[in-house]
Length: 211
Figure 1: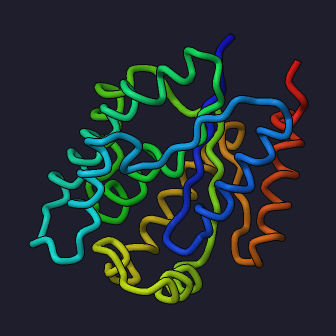
Figure 2 (figure 1 turned 135 degrees about the horizontal axis):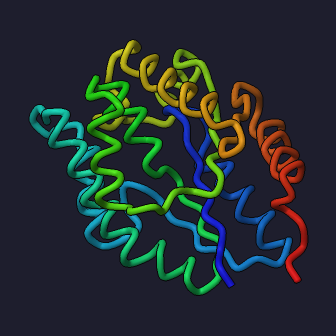
């Protein structure tokens, strides 16, 4: 039995953490065994790298270093968590995965898709998420929500145009492969967004009870 791999994506303030809980609960209610994880993070090494990547007091990091650190965490995450869970028949739900690198480093930092894709192929082989749930929100609204959470991390302190480029990169990828992406308008309240997400999953047959 092979598990399914679902990822949640979106810029800051899109509500990924809340919708992650909603998604995991719905999958478990349908009888699936679920491994919930996050990026960067998910492993001991990954969480240490997450601390570096999000540290607002860290000196300037060049985009190439940021990209490679993200994939270092991802390589460990794949080996230690994601692949073993899928091989065991679990459904893996990750708060962010490689689409975030295409959006943030490829789009936001201006590295472009080619370099991100080269590292993606090296680290992941042919493994890609079965479905990417993109919580789409205007950067102004998203950052207003993020500010309300308190002290902003290194990424959250970026300028508005950074997040506009990241959002545009996300949307390009979703529009290019609509069969593999579920784009959800995340501008409403959490309950409404959650319902939209679950309705989209049902329409794709992903919330049917396991047998």
